[in-house]
Length: 150
Image (cartoon, rainbow, N blue to C red; front, top):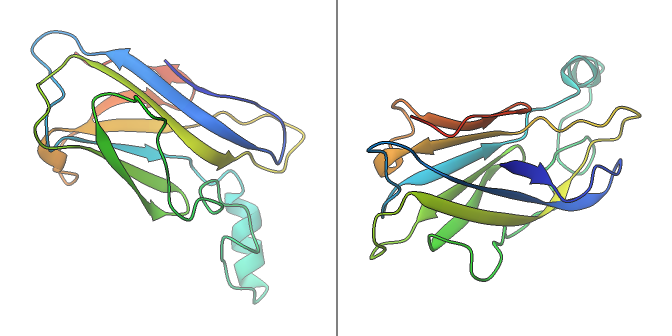
């Protein structure tokens, strides 16, 4: 399950995602989740740049732009570290020393909803064993359709 705390337009809100893997797939130390909030304004951004403006999180929409240092809620499991890769992508890496598990539960603070009259909930969450992000990921959530792996 993945969801935003609020769908209010142009508001900061938390993102929660939790679930359980199936079969032999386990989450263990060194694995990571990559959370992506796609740019909803691709055509507008192209026009913005074509008009001579430079992109930055402060002058155009970026969901993770307001997050200087991303944080997880206390008690999220398995224990993990989080970093902002770009204004559109976060990485959550499971800490060393945890026991392999089939359950995960995370809440990320301060995601910014887009400026729009249409509520946009598109978020992608992928799990990479051993954090091999160039390899094949298990897609846990893509767009608005949850997928808890195999």
